[in-house]
Length: 188
Image 1 (spheres, one colour):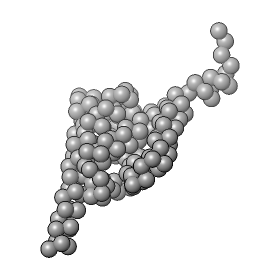
Image 2 (tube, helix red, strand yellow):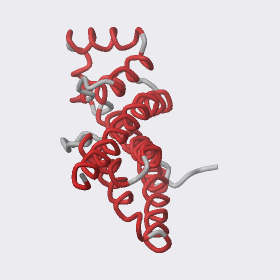
Image 3 (tube, rainbow, N blue to C red):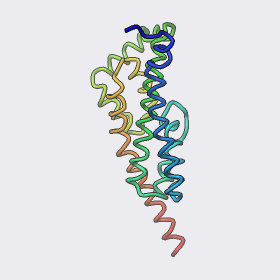
Image 4 (cartoon, rainbow, N blue to C red):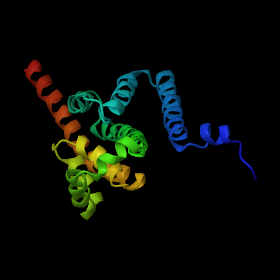
């Protein structure tokens, strides 16, 4: 069977399909939330803010988790943040994997520091990602090192989600605690 080259270039590329497969269900869920759960509009905003906040953009994400935890149950904030993290890390991995396939940028992988970093990362890649996702250590280098090391997307996304879930829960609990504390001070 011969496939049309234009069709193959446009439709069969995984990145656009992956992006559409992520964004369309998220938009549908947002519309359903807006229609049937109007009191939850802020958690929907938190979800959409969390995607770029967990991506390569420099948005302060932790204050958003704390704020959401002051409004909604911490478990709900954790689940919503986990889904947003899953979407953002999928997009990041697909984007940076494609970037490192460009010849001029792929040459960066041959530099001594990049080879050393990749070798260190490859010793325990999944646990390295979990560590960086869980702790306050800056996560941005991992966004580059994992695709540069050709680490599979499923391992990358699963490690980030496993690392971020407890972090989100603790931050959301902190927001709930701060909310209760301020309410008790105002009522006192």
